[in-house]
Length: 490
Image (cartoon, rainbow, N blue to C red; front, side, top):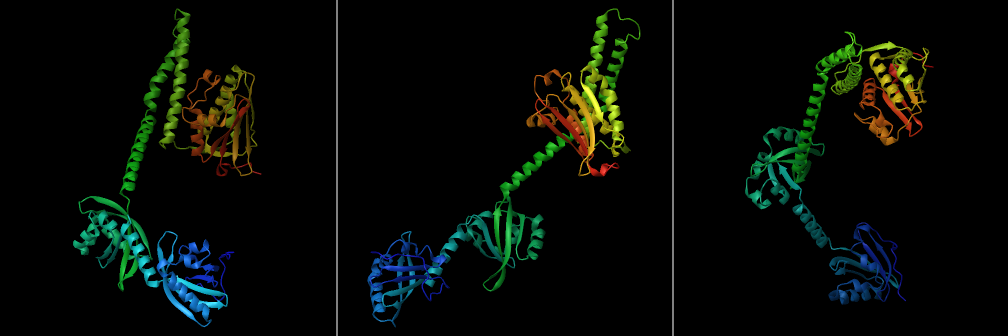
């Protein structure tokens, strides 16, 4: 029956430095096994086979067997030998082993990698990592290049590190872009202890590339030096530059558009005022009868269309002024009830013609506000117009105002109209956005009332909050921040 193999610690075994500890019986069967984590790969096969000698190189099995028998023969005997141990990848590890008897039926084999072979292997692997790295690695002391890998040489335009070494390494500073040399000098002069920054390099062929460097002080052959890792980030820099250019172009185009619209107020309104004025004169037949009733009807249509166009232009200009930051708030103290009363007076006739009940529950007990009175009136008119427009005949629209626990004040317009879903609210709040439904297609609008209201409230440091359920109605609340609420707090 084979002995069980476990990863258990043997008595009186030290694991510093790294050892592989194996206990075997007289037949060479593995009884116990303890492995330092750093050497688990070397000893991996020992966990799956029950005979120790099966892991020893065939040419050295007889030699190891002889030393095991010799140590078993007398408790005071200790053997120090070197042999090759099998690895999972098919290669062999050179190990130094100390063999001693634990008791009459058990032998301890204490193994560790051959220091010289292990060090050479580690050095070889590290060298391959450094030499084959795509990053540039360089060691410089007093402007003299003491070492560089292939990646650094290729970054500067050389075919190899050997070609770079054949050039003049003392001129390594010449490869730094002239505009960046002082910055690089200043950054390297205050390493604490590592510095990371970006700068430009001039390649051998005259091209300029961007590099990100991580530099740290080291000791090289007993002298102070600077070790640097460099990564070519030219592609990233080009992408950033293109993005910056696109962003600046878009901002310039948007700025030009908004400034143009903001400056067109007089030019657009003057001809419209003439159209509205003369069409009203004709519609009212102030200069005498027209001769045909159709002319009066047509004049009324012209006047109505002109008013709609003027509303559209006003909304566009207001939005453009806000975007161009040319709309200044003219702040004053006022009672919200006064604004509500004005808006009710202006829209009551429209609500009555649409058979919509319009009520208000904002009294003079409400707190005073400090804001732009005209802008707040425009916000409330927009919210009320929207509510009346999208509430079917027989519906209700109400205005309420209250102070919340967070000391904000909200003017809410609530209707029991068609309501909106969350995606439809997002559309309605976007400039020129209009919710598509059978009912809304019957309504005339610019799609700018809510975006303008939202922008005006943002200028006040507030917001417009929309709560709606399809088929059940909508509540739109203009929220004023605490610093604009002056009185009436409890």
